[in-house]
Image (cartoon, rainbow, N blue to C red; front, top):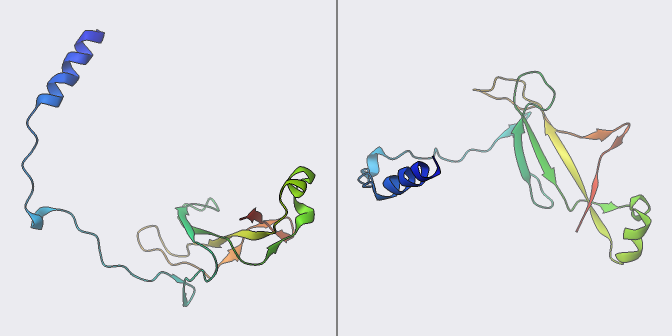
Length: 128
């Protein structure tokens, strides 16, 4: 059986490749658009944005999650003691923005963002 698999793979690698498609037939990306959160274009002004589209709240609609870092200082008291001793420089504070989808998956409409919370406080992580 193992020899059959190797033979099949070898045969596939020797198969002729399809001809290049004409430029007109290849899929093209749409022009970029600004995504709105509420009435405002989404703009993470500090740090790098790390977007992810997923159903965050379980309502069946894909929400937009955007991680950001670089805004504010992360409190060193929140770090484990071993990390506090090892790192002498400060950390920036990383947070997660949640833009809930108020539309549909095929025509999303995102709310203004809210930060992820851990209890009553904003959830955050240290970033460098």
